[in-house]
Length: 572
Image (cartoon, rainbow, N blue to C red):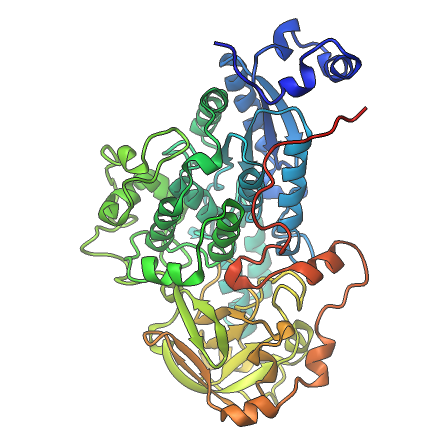
């Protein structure tokens, strides 16, 4: 039976336009390439400037082989690639742009389905946002984590150990020479971070959502099984087109329920919260930050990986992989949630044994009992803020301390190591002006380095509050994504050094102990206002004018929802 292909709107017929479309794409392909064969785009985020994704051209070739084998025509489509470690001021500024550009190119071109190749933090979220909005058959291939590097006999977790070792240098317990020597051992192979940072988190969450072949996420970048799975994904993409299986046809609230359970069980990055909210917004699925608390806060942490544990991503694969983790929390998953294969996620859990209980803990002896992301509200965060208890210090989860306020990241860097800074271990450090509008783009600065004089005294954690984000590889008692942000008129803009801040994680509260009338009478100081972004043109101007707050996913207001795949007008 002939397929009703979207691409036939370009290629079918004998008029001038069909001639043009076929002629310029003919370059070596067989004559029947334009007759009933699904055209499969490979949205490829490979880039030398995104080192975590630099190997994706090799993965793309395996996808191509699978597409050809299944009777489709593969088409490499480079997309905007965001490397978390290099781009300034923050990769989050361009997540929405990458999603918009990918969506528009998928809609504008004669493609019937797409394979989404991502790895580094923002690439998988942006690709899923795009595919959800254009709503053509789509499937994800995560690029996989790097292999573990070692320094002086000890395994290194990229990201996590950077934060740890740099603090030891500032504390005077590690030499600058040793710190720099470890640099060459940290990044040992191709692939993304080997900790449970945002890249690993989003790969696993994409599988929990049902958007990858089950069992694929977490496969190391250097593992030949990644190429095998990429080949299989190419074949699956052709089948998806034949069966008309688009994202909106199987992604429901149940899929996001499973993603939140998984996020908690793996001790995943807080960055997954705005990404999942943004993806849900593109699909028209009602998802809010309170769902993360309601569904996930009491889920036990089972994966003993840094930054919340000991091991690294290749250990997770060795211990049984992601499906083995999900099997431990099977009763918490929604059994009706389908995957891109057409089968429920829970169908893939029967044969998923655990081979190392130090890495994947049993349900009755978890790494932590209740470790999911917790949502806080109160006079300091009326719209909500989040904390990751799995990465925090238990003794700080209920705390009262004096605020030490920094009006911008520049202010923070200028004063944090000042010996005269009035700060002690009980202080609450507050950094503002780092939200979506204020920075712009919500940078990963919430896990502020501690004052040097306190590090020298042996202090290794303090309560920190910010309207920005923190790296998924980071740790500490950090309250982040404070909403509304300071630049959007939130109370964070009104806090003064010396105010008492009250944190009660179990009570879900974060408050400023200042009379409401006094707080209402305050206005932001000039230093705070001067720290807010004020772009005059370009993407930054568009972003600041239209970005929404973190509690809804920090998407642009005009990008929420779907426009579908229809293009009504010809190009000639």
